[in-house]
Every structure is written in C-alpha cells, then in structure tokens.
Length: 189
Image (cartoon, rainbow, N blue to C red; front, top):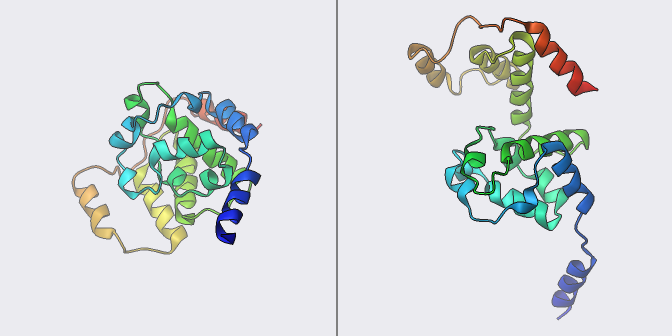
C-alpha cells in the first residue's frame, strides 16, 4: 500500500513544463500540440526501428510536459532530419524542425547526451556546411572516425560507397560561400 500511495504522490507533484513546450514551438516554428497520434510519422521514419519512443512518442512527451525525458531521449539525436515524418503527417507538423529545436535546447542546457558520438557527427556535418556550403560526406566520415578513434569498424561500407560513387573524393562548393557564412553568423546571434 505504501508503494501505491507514493506513486499517487509522485503523479500529484508532477506539473507539466508548459514553458518548455512553448519554447519548442517558438524555435521550431510549428505547433506539435496539433498531433493526433495517428502514427503516420513513425510508420514512415527510416530510423524508427532504432528509436525508443519514435517521432510520435517524442511529441507525446512534449504534449505531456516531460521535458527531461524528451531532452534525454536518444531519439532526438537519431533523427536524420529527412522530413519523411513531416511529409507523412496529416497535420503537416514539421517534426524535423521540432527535433532540431530539441537538440539545440539539449546542448544549451548541458543535457547529458546518451549517444555522444552522434553529437560529434552533427558537429562534423555543420563544419562541412560551414566550409563548403554543402556536405562533403567523405570528409565528414573521415573526421568523425578520427574524432571517435574508430578507424576500421565499418571500412567495408565506406569502400562500397566509394566504388558505387556515392562519395565524392573532392568537395563541391556553392557559388556564393559568403551566404553560408552569413547564415552561420546569424544563427550565433
């Protein structure tokens, strides 16, 4: 009986973090509260099989005000921002933007990232965008592998991608790199 009463007490004490939800809405530019929990996003997500909550579950955590659980979830880092979930959503919620907002907040608040290697990978992608205005996948992978000190674990995949011409040896650049620098300087202010 004591166990039951402590559970009731825990539920009675919990108050949803509405301000956090409002911040996610502000940063993502979309309102996750419109979600119907239809699971279309999870059905289309190419990485949902590796997720704990899946996109709809992260939205549900936000709807319920579970800030800590949402920010500590590895799912926000597993999201590859492919927009498949957003395209499938009947409410047209930009779930990718929401995941981006959650990652930003997690970094700003110093939340312990359950998959620290993923953050290193994200940094390398951003560095590539900053340098070339596009992603140079070969360089991203090489720099990530150096950072992780994991040189050979999936070398066969990299070689296979090279032989199928999925990785360019030389990076392509955009015509006006100053535009990218302006974007990065605006995001820092």
